Image (cartoon, rainbow, N blue to C red; front, side, top):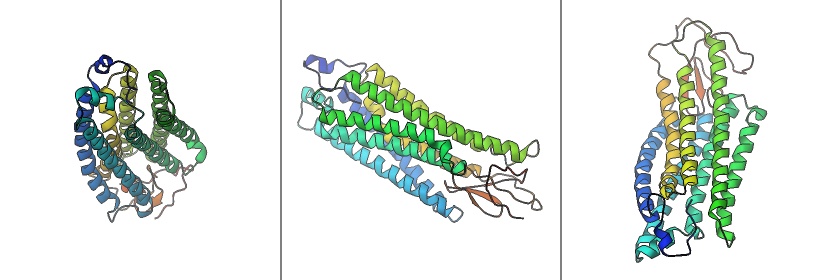
Length: 327
């Protein structure tokens, strides 16, 4: 989040590490690169979700979420480009830094509203995964929902303050931002841990000490790694925010498409995991383990709302699951 305009002209150029105009230029370059990665993964993920083998009912939710993420990332890129043009065209260095340092401008609110909305969408998707994996038990995900709502309130309060309050303090803005990201980290960590625990529990119950050719543990690791990556960039955001560096502008600009990269990368990795080298014996009956995200069952596969199927062996039936079985 940008610092409010300073009183004296010389202080405008006193920044921690770099000046804000340099940070904004570097940020939009990084954003363009990350957006390109997201666009590539977006196309591939849409192909996966809309493919013949995908779970149509579950995929609709993920397709909608993916379209919202792409719209937000595209809007972020457009708003950031407009911000750069307004700052650099027909302005000298002093006017440019003054413009970029002013959080009361509408374009500042637009930039950060898009970013915060992307975080909210990412939190909602992770909570939804946990909700379905736990057979839609609302009490399981209630803490994550509460934490996500708290994060959203802190985020949008920051934007409201910059547009409606006459005096916005740096300390006050930073504290609200830190609270927002801390709550988002907590919500994602909570949901990710419960998803991983659910899959690990089924790994133990279904496979026991038998064959593990189609183990779910690689999927568990993918989910944990994705959650860790999301938490890592939010922690980095908090650290830079607290440091007062204008490097925060770089993080703020590429973070929106980066959230989309995390989301799509997990689907792609699970899709590759769904093609094991060795398959179950044709004489063995089938069973189905709901993965993150939908519990729709086919003859010998488990389908997830991310549009991914995983072959599983039949093992001891877990009474905690309400999955159907076929001979």
